[in-house]
Amino acid sequence: MSQESAVIHTRFGDIALRFFPDVAPNHVRNSIELSKKGFYNGTIFHRVIPGFMIQGGDPNSKEHDRAGHGMGGPGYTIKAEFNDISHKRGILSMARAADPGS
Image (cartoon, rainbow, N blue to C red; front, side):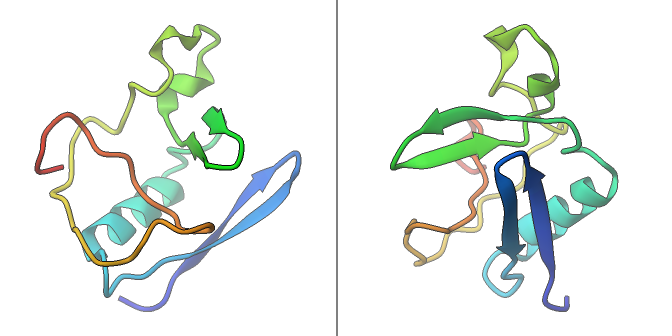
């Protein structure tokens, strides 16, 4: 898989993303495929913790009822691809499901 990148467009400006397929090939492939299908279009950052993180991409966040925000997904899970990269400022990660192997 070649080096891939993407941009998240927000009202506050753009966020440039760079993927690392050598570290998490299945997660990178999944993110790119979902993005190309428009899965993330219209979603919001449904969880914002200043100085810590933002979380978005949940299709439920397209709905006005916030009760389901953070609970949606594409309908499947991906096996975890653990690595030694620290969650430092600027790192893009995928949320895990309740399944310990996700």
